[in-house]
Length: 352
Image 1 (cartoon, rainbow, N blue to C red):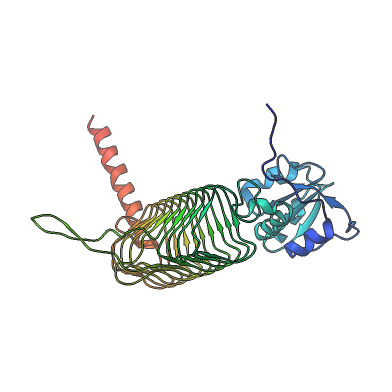
Image 2 (cartoon, rainbow, N blue to C red; image 1 turned 90 degrees about the vertical axis):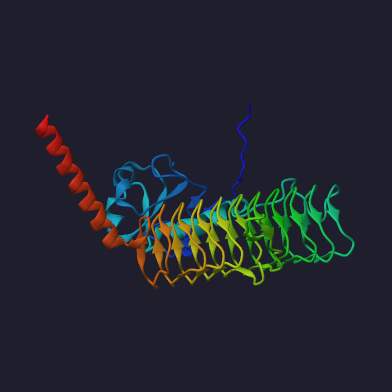
């Protein structure tokens, strides 16, 4: 069986371009025209590869690396082995990301599964839909009446774009995703299987049965948002569900109706956010965090993974636990419980 290359390299690139992209300093005497053909981890990089290092855990791997060049923070520059060029930068990981995007641009966002250009045969585009020039539509895509899609946007196979939905320019919608009752900004990435704009979970509960409440809001997703595979974002009940610009949402996240998420938030896998909750700008929710409804999480707050939030969180706070509380308080409780458990175990062993 052949070994396919899923992400072909657009290289080589000159060492000087690597340094410019990464904001790094070239070592004295280094050849600026030296070719970098690929990227690799420290332990497997070869003499034509670029690697990076910014974590003390990988100091040993750095010392043994055979990479041609390595992006490295100032604190680790002295550990770069002879034969590897140290490209010193304050943020090696961000620099590496920029170089990687230059070398393998096809990995940066979902692309046509067929290498298509224009509207493919086998897609279904309603005659009342409006597509700007330069939209790419794979086979199996369905676009409803009144939908509007901006230039440079790619719709991968099986995507469904509902009636009246608006998608901005240079977006990417992965295979099998569905976008309904939604307004999408520019440069938004929506990965495969995501569900945007379906019913919120709204029922008027009663002894005689649960009466469905029609959900008449929308989903508004601002510019430069990325939404992971199989994530669901419900449309609003009476107000809109909103995701602010630059926010990054991982796979398998559930965002309920009327939720408002601010700018540049980070929401990690398997988070569940209940209805009418607000996240202010720059909030970070670790994996599997659960948030009950009608709360406010303040600007810049960070919540540890697997925590449960049942009350408002002040701006800039760092909380964790179930129920979540300030991290220092949580750690003290965990330490106390551990000490009590050890004492009880020691008492039991003594009694035996």
